[in-house]
Amino acid sequence: MKGVTKTLLSHSHQVAKSAKAQSILICADAFTDPEELIELTEGKGTEIKIVRAGGPWPKAEDGDLDIDLPSIGLTRMGQVKLAVLVSISRGVLKQNDTIVCVAGLTGSGILDTMVVLDLAKEFEMFNTNPATITEAVDEAVFERVLEIAGRLAREGREGRPVGTTFVLGDSDAVSKHVQQMILNPLEGHPRKRRNIMDMALDETIRELSALDGAFIVDREGILLSAGTYLDAPAQGVDLRQGLGARHYSAAAITKATKAVAIAVSESSGGLTVFKSGTVLIEIEKPTERRKQTSARLPQSPPAKPSKGT
Image (cartoon, rainbow, N blue to C red; front, side, top):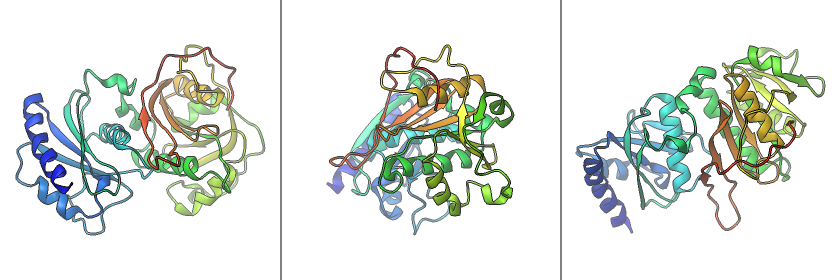
């Protein structure tokens, strides 16, 4: 099977040339060591960009890894969609690029899937421009919250599923569309102890996720509140069938402001990222038979439920 990777990478350059692609995006979750993959990609004509979830490779040297993705567990196509989302938000890819994406099952050591994407024509896969994420929130904060939300979706709290929403950035505008459902448990704590980039805060977030309501996070990653009711108008928000009140309120707050929202579904354990009132990406929770998660496209909108979180 190792020959599959070598053959696929070789053909990916031919495909990139035929498609006039600007780059080949390799989702390297399949590999635990960079040396073999880097050796397979050396001396080729098309620019190679390597992305990987789960942190940098232990043996990787500077420049070996173009992007370190949030570690939230993905299928092959999930890797592709998240890699493109993060790459565009960071400016590594452009909205009108044509790219060849190569991926494989996490930890398998084999690349076995290739997809050609013309982002200018197929950008409806995100419904809005992922580059606008950084208008509202620092990219590192967004990726950190995405990882926290992914962990909550997979593990829940004390073995039980949880549902919650994170609203990121544009705090002044967001404050006009929220109410506290309970006394804010984060109020009065020093800012440095409320920085979501601090991993020591993870367990606090897990405990507070049991509260009804949303987490509000500012552009720099400071947790402003928890247990917060989102009260933005939901008129004009159209979502696919199966998404409930939490998702509508998350979409509505991003339509009324420049914020980004990440919703964790209590019923399905899935993640949905919203910007400008629409879905950027949807990621399903892993099942017992399929330990990966997958990203899917939004479908036709249902009738709108009442707003809430």
